[in-house]
View 1 (cartoon, helix red, strand yellow):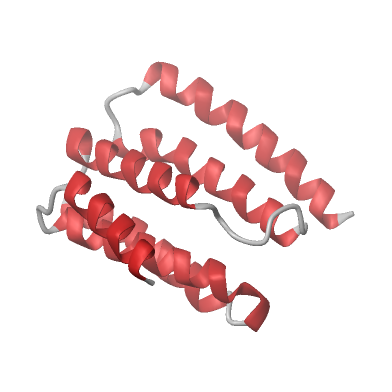
View 2: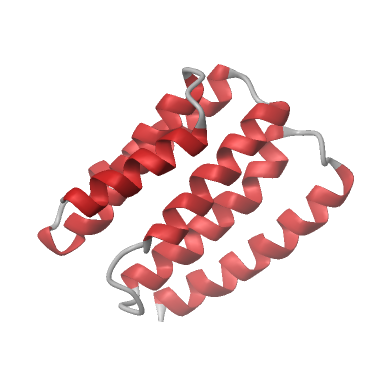
Length: 135
């Protein structure tokens, strides 16, 4: 029941972010609000048992969208806020059943930190694919 209520709230949030984006396209927080709403949907699906973890495409999508938003409108402080948000989520998901999700969140954190230090996102994604094939 609580999950259903949360899903309705997230649906409302998605509508609000779309509306806000129409009037403020050049604002980092407006642009990332939609990404955060999508993250909530992924987390609700995870917590609701619909998925076991984020697949790699979701991870790449989130990192790419945050990086694009940051490059267009953001500051280091703003991107660090996103990184701190993910760090909090990784810290909260400590139960063994969330190990894979926590590792994915940690990979997103690493990718965002690298982006904030000027690393090329395409290089990171290629390296991640190579490391995934090795491991």
